[in-house]
Image (cartoon, rainbow, N blue to C red; front, side):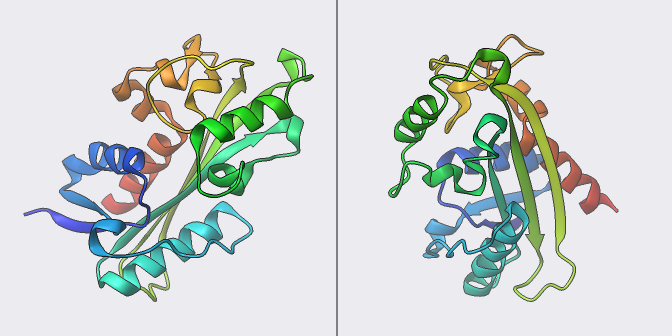
Length: 197
């Protein structure tokens, strides 16, 4: 029988990724929205703080173990922006197209070689709301920001995030390959290693 984990996110793209990456570990990941949980207020100043806030909030309301990630795009030419504000870079409600348009506008005069960036991910698993030793796994994925959208897969900034090793954007990668090499995929592999200890 699979163990239920509540995912402290309403993002359907993340739910698919987490279910795909954790299925063989016997976890069934359920979106918090499907259990009547609203989003936690993200008042943290780092990916780790926000992931912890979200996981504890979801666990408190559902009574289940909770999984949360806080991830975002860190662009060197923008001093690390959008960072923890990646999902709401262009304001609320969150909108991938608007976020991508704002990023392109912000980098309009930045030459290609200075458009270095990375996706950062912090995943937290709490067994209960006051878990004093949450499992925390972090990873990053290096790339460059293009000056036009490329590709139909993925979500968020994937169509602008160029992966030099594969000579394509994250939105052009086959799902299995993306899951293997992405910031979230790497962080989940680290989480799986922690779960196996």
